[in-house]
Length: 410
Image 1 (tube, one colour):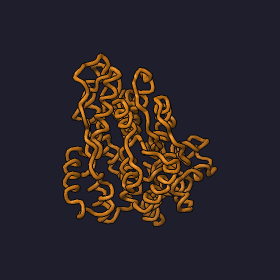
Image 2: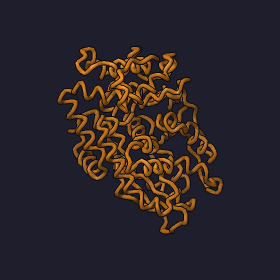
Image 3: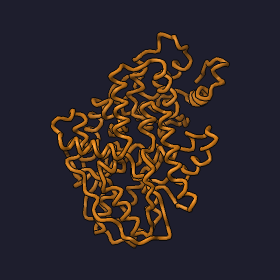
Image 4: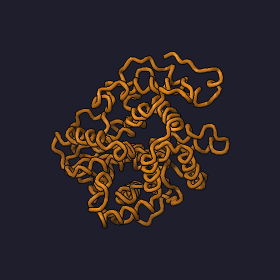
């Protein structure tokens, strides 16, 4: 793809990055074939190739160009950032990086209406602080009939209790764990089950309560500077334990894992944090990356459930771990049902299910139809956003896969 940036523009770091990514695109259109929004809407501008052209035109235009409109922003907003297109692309186009650049630029040039700005600000403030979110969730469950519909649907009937604490034993192997922002409130048993399973495998979880939201929510709602500040705060919280030899930073939510693994890239130009951020990214591991390397055959598992596994986009497209959880569950004796079009997004995509409810609901229902085709007793997944979104349909029960494994250990 040819680009036409001015010499002055080419001196700007974000234009240099965009230029590199744009020039790698051969506009073959393979990406559209696996794009969930293009499949539903059939509009070239709602597929990756069309959005790439929109971003190119946006970045090449001047600030007063009248062609840069709210319509451009609409098509960028509709993108799930599922990165399915990156898995499909034969040219290795780093689409998500270009999208972040385009979204930041359109936000600067075309301010949102006050109602949209207020919604996005409220989402950031409600979701990113675990204690605040848990308090608001408790309040919302108490007065559930009064909560607006699309938020009410996201509330679990009653979060599964965290259950017993792991043993008090201290193991020589130590890992950190990012507890997340909404997961402790929506599914407190997920992190507790992780600690219990790792304890059985001789691994201790060292708490780092100062670490909060990974930064993805701020970043993908175009508060990118705030997102980077959260990254720095998490690095500061983890760094003393890293220096003391923590083996890994475990992520139980694949969305957080995908983001933490890019800390090094996001702070590469920060002289104070670049090296530390790269080290954190190296230590970040999705839970399945830890478990698949352990002697699971030594565990006594009562695997008597028929499961359908929903592989989140952040696990299969961002972290390239497609098939990893399925391999662990099958190895432990669980029966997994086949899932057609498993590469497609469920529509959760962080806050997408709130900001784009119609598209998200259609994608969710399509995904549930595929997951339920094999008549599973339960659907399991690896990301709290997907878990909550799929469960909001009140169809087949949905849990994190580590909870099922923990329960099967007795």
